[in-house]
Image (cartoon, rainbow, N blue to C red; front, side, top):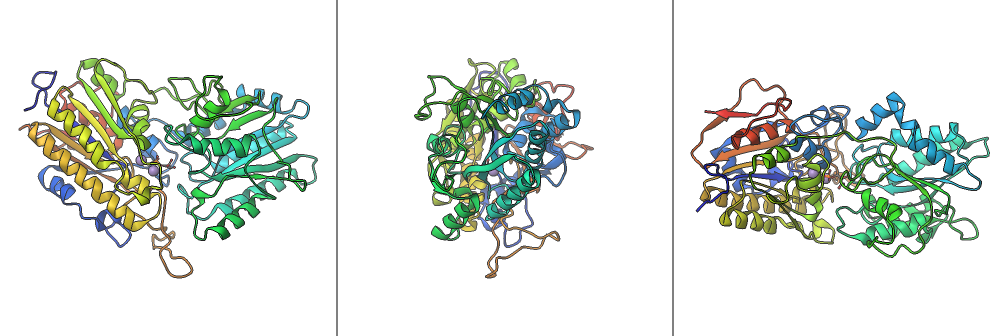
Amino acid sequence: MSTTTTPGVRPLVLVVMDGVGTGTGDAYDAVAAAATPQLDRLRDTGIHLEVAAHGTHVGLSSDSDMGNSEVGHNTMGAGRIIPQGAKRVDDAVRGGEIWEGAWQDAVAAATADGSALHLIGLLSDGNVHSSWDHLMLLLDHAKSDGVTRLRLHTLFDGRDVEDRTADRFAARLEEALVERTDGTDLDWQIASGGGRMVTTMDRYEANWGVVEAGWRAHVQGEARPFESVSKAITTLREETPGISDQLLEAFTVVDADGEAVGPVRDGDAVIIFNFRGDRAIELTRAFVEGDGFAGFDRGTVPDIFFAGMTLYDGDTNMPPVRLVQPPTITDTVSEVIARSGMHQLAASETQKYGHMTYFWNGNRSDPFDAETETYIDIPSDQIEFDKAPRMKAAETADYVIKALEEGGYTFLRSNLAGGDMVGHTGNFEATITAVEAVDEAVGRIATAVEAAGGCLVVTADHGNSEDMVERDKQGQPRTSQDGTPLWKTAHSTNPVPLYVVDYSGHRWEPAEGVEAPGLSNLAATLLVLLDLEVPQDYRPALIAPA
Ligand SMILES: O=C(O)[C@H](O)COP(=O)(O)O
Ligand SMILES: [Mn+2]
Ligand SMILES: [Mn+2]
């Protein structure tokens, strides 16, 4: 039944179960709590390894940093460990490059008569999209470089940090402002904000309405008015008890006359301080694109100086001006496979589409060879994901299965989003359902791979769903005041499983002596399974012929 365009090579299918790590199996492990007969079957039939997916294993600063999709997919696709995210910016801070070029231009614009410097980004120390320390450094340098009028537009996290901590982060920021402005004539204020999932930080164009809400709040000063950020948080929490920080409505801070304290005006400088691109690119485009911009009706677009923390999209060179230059990642695994002439398919629902294409390919959106590569984007639901926790697992599997049945592709990769996206809601029961849907999808794909005489590799980009509770320093589960578990919405530092099942008759065994196996070993593993040469600088394959 199998036909491939490369004679003698069977199809190789990779499934990334987003956010499905290996936990302790305790009462807060939604993967252990879920019925996963298909994953159990893979574990019993093929090779089962556990690989590291966090911290220095994926190019982050320290091993206390949890993994995330950007660094996970970058590392899997690159076959090497590339300095990432916060670390890249840290290096630029250490070397001082960050305070040259674009920063100086922003300061020049912001210190011209009556102008302001706007800092927009995620108020968090989660180190996934932004860094608290970077924000503090920006404030320090704004002060020493003479920026007198500064406005902050703060997005609440609740997703990469403990939920319902927005008030604490806002208070910390207020304190940081007082520390720097007390006894001076600096006019520095928080001007707007909102929860990241409803304000500004949409991704992959899933819902431009989210960005529009941010634009109204930050740029036009026309969101729901509050006298202060703390008043906004308190009121919104009273109105919807238990609401997650991610979902707090967009707001604008107004003065005693009801005037917005910091809309963006002609001549101002705007910096987005997030370093991760997927959720920063849409607002960036709203600022820098011309009349062709179709995301939403922006009204009058202020004429400003704009810079991002770093490059958010390499293909479109967005933003054109940034404080820190990105790393170049070449010779990624799909580039190597494309050079061999093998045909490739990438399929994912929207929430993880760019992960399986852009991040996988070393921050490049377009295929290396449009003739041989097909990308499928399956529209994600536009609701909170615990309301429809199966997400598009079945539909994603359908595409992969159909492609296998029709033949033509040698390497087929896909992402199943549920373990991660539903894990981020902190809803334990819904996360179990999400993992069960992932398991079913993997099972159906496995059956199709077997029928095609192919090879299946299943892994994950980082943990999330296998550890759903906040823990104290000793690792003990924390509870709310009423004794209920303090559900965790963030990723974890756990390892992830890696299953290899070859239905073609090739026999494999775990490779010996691989040091600290991690996601960076996946690319070489795939190339060995495809019988392609592994680039010299790749980390080694985790399997060898038996
Ligand atoms: O952007 C998000 O949803 C979270 O901050 C990180 O999740 P991801 O790294 O799995 O995309
Ligand atoms: Mn992920
Ligand atoms: Mn995630």
